[in-house]
Length: 538
Image (cartoon, rainbow, N blue to C red; front, top):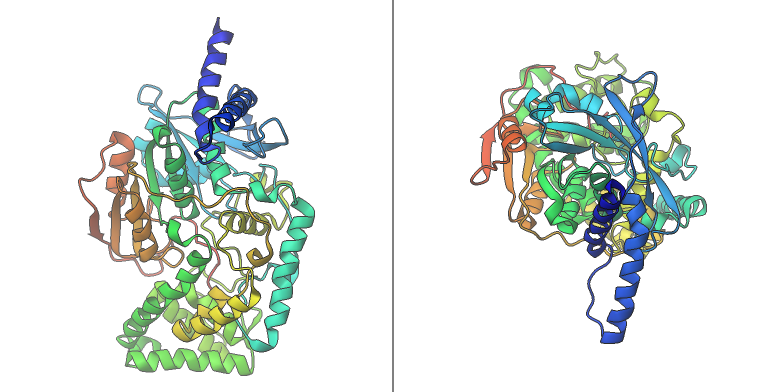
């Protein structure tokens, strides 16, 4: 009897999953009959995925015993679920109070390409006890990432350097780089690439929900994870319970526009930094007016372009400084310290030790918000996995990437004039110009699902305008904006957004309207409690 009931539940869940497989299209009666037969076959093929029983076991001898792991199977192509399968690695830290347990809280650290298998472990200290009493914390490596059938393109050395300034002399070389990355990824993962999309990851999340026996899931997603969460609410609105979307992606800008918004957001941050630093000329000696401070920075850039500056074991050009310092300008004190240290190095002196953990990057990393995975979570994962999975998702998610290299040239020239700090780098050619199309068009997010969006005013990776874009299309959501808030990642940082987020997760009550609150003064030299975003600053 129990087996029969389980089968009925699985078939019902498969029928619920099916409408999210493909867009509804009007069709004549014979076509509808054929489509109905196909749908029935698809339901039958999906049912075994939903009947899986996780075999929970210790994640690794190095991992805490409280964190359990299991591996599920999901279809590569949800339109053909009887075909090739992928591994999906999941983890669980059980709710600390069985009596107070409400359900599961899925976690995503961002990316795309961020591994989340160990996220219950490193998020636990940031989460209030009330949240940990209420939910099992569920981590997972999204498809193609970490332990979930990881992709690799065999990228090495300069192939990993994606932050490329536009120069006429190097344009053809940059086009070859973009084409080479795309071709290497296609050669190694050709049949898989079209299916490494946010929509399919959302479907995987719904398989996790069904396998765990939950009617709904709650969710906490950072950065890219906000877009993943928004797509889930669009595809499975009846399955979304309490969703916290922290440091938000604007769905209208995926994905080229989300890189370009870094350039747009950097200019007001740069202006704010110049004013802040000018008021502290006695400390930094970069100038006592914003104009003088800006000139001091650009003088440093020009000097490095003439002769690279030796800094923390690297030789930095002016373009390296523009690219690497961009995120620092969202934290005026960190940026002022950095520019002073760069100036000292340029003048042949020895810079003082960095006042924070920001150091010169070994190389630019894909734009993501993700912790460095623990040693056991990294085991047997290809070295270029985060890069490979990042390009896989951002290139396959949308068909809006221009295909003509000359379009990138024109846009880079235009945007360097409009946004001198980063405009050409943001708009220059990317591997997506040569990437195979994804299996579906991008998701149009436009719904009334309840969710709570958290946003710092000064966020280098998802600027305020990006969070406002998500709020516009999620009409049932509420947004908490931390005025003066700095950094990427809000919840768990001790800001004024923590209380409404905790209240929502534990009671289900959203604020009656959008909330604006002020950031507390930051302690000098204080490090963020959440992981630093990538790409790292200098």
